[in-house]
Structure formats: C-alpha cells, structure tokens
Amino acid sequence: MSLKNLIENEFETLTKSDTLIKGLSLMDEYYIDVLPVLDKGKYLGLISNTDIVAFEKIHSPIFKHTNALEKVSIQYNATIFDAVKTFQKNRHSILPVVNKQNTYLGYITASSFLDCFIELLGIDSIGGILEVEMLKKDFSMSKIIHILESNDALLISSFMSSTSDLNKINITLKLN
Image 1 (cartoon, one colour):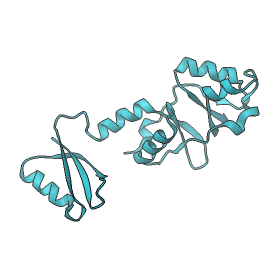
Image 2 (spheres, helix red, strand yellow; image 1 turned 30 degrees about the horizontal axis):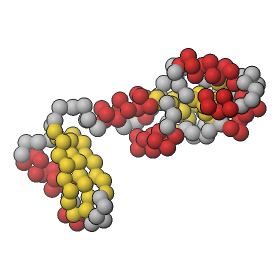
Image 3 (cartoon, rainbow, N blue to C red; image 1 turned 120 degrees about the vertical axis):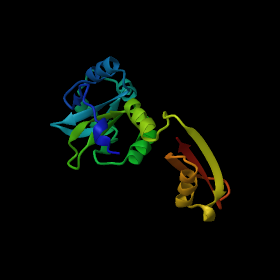
Image 4 (cartoon, rainbow, N blue to C red; image 1 turned 45 degrees about the horizontal axis):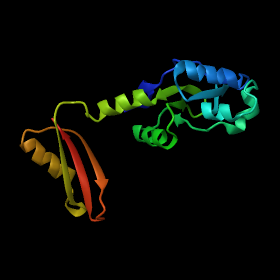
C-alpha cells in the first residue's frame, strides 16, 4: 500500500518568519500538537506546542528557534511499516511527508493512518481470528494456506511474532 493516498494538506503550515504565538494559535485551531515549519517549500522540521510554551519570548519569530525543531518526517515513497515505526517513535498527531529533495508534500494524520491500517489488515471485516503457536522449523505459510483453502477458508491477513521460547513463533490469522 502506498502512503501517497493518505497525504493531506488541510491546515496552514508555518514559515520560519512566523511567530511562535501564531504557531500556538494554529495548533489550537486544528487540534494538533505540532506544526511543520517550511522555508520556501522546504521542510525544516516540526515545532510542538510544548516547545513553544517553553520558550521565553512567545512573540519571537520561529527562525530564532530552528535548532529546536524536530526533524521528524517520512519520505512519500516509504512503506506502511516505516510509517508505523515513525508514528510510534514520535507519538505526534501528524507525520510530515517529504520528497527526496526535502520538499514538503503534506502530512498524514495518526487518525487517518490508523483507519487505513485497519482496512489494510482486514481487522474490521467479518470473519474469525485463529492464533497458533508453533515451532519455527515447522512453519510453512504455503502449508497453512493449503489447509485453509482445503477447508473453504480464505486468509485475509496474517501476523507473525516471536515468543519467549526462541524456537517458537506465534501466528495470528484473520480468516473470512
């Protein structure tokens, strides 16, 4: 799945000449905790409401605080797994999207990403969940698929995770 379909541009970004108080005002208006800061379309980083409140002069321009900007972003051609990792690591309400030249393309919201992730994994589709613990040496996805199909079941999604026993794995199957 491509993240390109999730890119939004609903709210105003900040420029380095904007004031900190403008940033707080926009964050309050859009109900978000961070805003991207740009310089002529190039992404400089995120500024958070907690950072702004910590600065002494709230009416000063952002360019005086560019060293405090978080360099959090994701490339427009990144995978969904990259996005999960970045959202989890930074825990912001938005994730800026840039191209290879660091041009700001928009952002992905945590909410829209979660909706997409749920749809992609078939979590909200009708069906059952089967959890199996097995030895790693016995694992074969083709054998699992064969058993499912021979019993008129369809695999919607699957997950593997490790266990405390290094010789075993957990397999979670979402079935129709």
